[in-house]
Image (cartoon, rainbow, N blue to C red):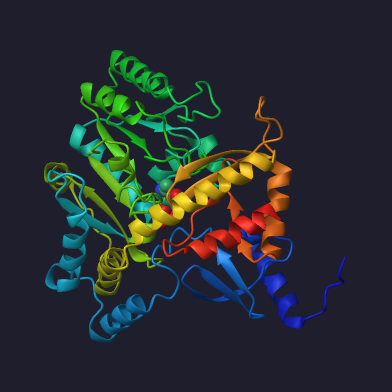
Length: 433
Ligand code: PLP
């Protein structure tokens, strides 16, 4: 009800946003009048009016906004050297060696740097197709894997990717998202039922002479709402695919790098070892850096076929960013922090669920949680309008949190891994209010 104060700079901003929106910008999707963010520190963002917001959406800046170690390391490198002759400089080796220290298995001994998660997924698909000499890939519904050609093809998020629905190529085959809260199979024991879908699809494809090259899945399903696949899913699906000579790709772009708290990788948390791992986002803390981790022989197969090289991927400044992020995660105990603050947050959300009927369930773990809002606990009718309203109201309480694109009734909490207990409490109090 408060009339807007005419402010030429805000009008300009709104105009710019209108254009941005036409080009796919997202701010107005959730806010009538989004703030203009100018600075960040840790898990906080500061707007042009000096207001602070708790940033619960930024899963890219894992070590927090404007981390001084990162700013100094990258700036120093930019003053020394930034070029693409990557085999000649130390930063590249530093990054790949540091990343391999986290390899979930000694056989996964090779890192190829790329510029983004989309590129990591495209490369992962190319690798498995060349290594197996096959085309077909099994992907999971409600997933988003990126916007480049192959990544887009294995994504089904209509919200981000309308073109994918119309243009999905015939080498992609979909199975249901293994969601034990809603979906064809319910309950904590539904993992094997969902895994049987993968096994049955493998059998059908093999019968048609098109045994799959790979199965691609996020170890925790991002767009589906931060859903942890029930036990028995990945550890059932991986052997089914491998029994047909296929490979397993884990998209760890959102959930890797310690975000889940109990493990550095979602795959490890799920007790599986993929053949190819795709990483990005946290890898460069918003520097354009990603990577594929895989076995040497898989890379060699592609090397025999041709090129996989992108000019700026793994260049010194990005590589230094990558190595520094891993150092900071280790030195500041950020994975442990994700476990500890994540558990505190989950307990607080459980308390709120007991008193707020809209709160259906809380998915995820560590600092990757999805708060699912429903109108009815039996029918699970999504409380979509209410979620949008809550999201807008939370902005007024200084909290930036947004629904996941595939499930507009799930608020996804994925802050920097530096989130403190006090900051988590601030969010809980705002949500309660
Ligand atoms: N995979 C997952 C699970 C993602 O969430 C995303 C981006 O949101 C991507 C891949 C694509 O990464 P990028 O945006 O760096 O291209």
